[in-house]
Image (cartoon, rainbow, N blue to C red; front, side, top):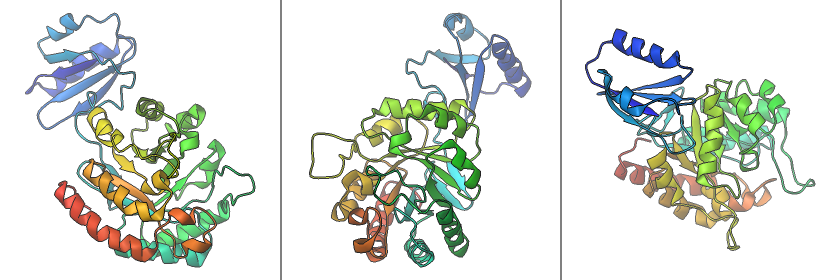
Length: 336
């Protein structure tokens, strides 16, 4: 249930009204806009009479929320959420690009790519250290050794870093990782999501291979229900009958999510297509659809990459793309 308070009420009156709602066993999510305060009521609201609450002298409007996701719902939080990582921002009018190799492979590789993507305008460095692979014989990532290399690149460039976590116990070594990525295969690992709800880092949540957007929002709800509201949603393509690309980019999911949730929405054109020559077009489409950012794979030697070289841009190709993306973002009224 959503309760919009009238303008001009005192803080004491607001606090007293919220306390009366909490005394009924409800959790009250408070969203303060420039002109109005909105209260999102979470819990068993079946016993509440909307007409009685609407008749309260402090209340302007009461709405029942039909969707199963509450905290992620734009009705609960009308203004866009902005995620801050140092000087880097994403959401709330800021367009952020995350770029880097699928896998961290060596000190020379990750530092060279980090410097290149920063020079091109990327706000975040992405790099895989634990890699979920379909084949048990494929490169699984460098593990903890890779973390040290990724952190060294972070110190060299100042870019906040994004990396994927696969298991709860790995949180112990993610202290210097700025944004924790939950991959498509773990989107509905609910125990992991609950644990991430108790941490203070932003979470990049990727849509599952065959998951609906509502299931994506419910996965975000698991994290937010634990207290961590710093969630970034990622459309990374879904599995369909089409086989020319690695996945099918559901570009319509972007504006739909922007209507339904206040959380930042980004697109991964690298995994969505699996073909480097298609990445620029998919990236531009994402900006036009209203995305708040992109996560793009960049490798300084794609032909010899240990993971997903066929979908990685070269530093030069990424730099060229960023020139166009900055123009596109400006047309959409977003700051890069």
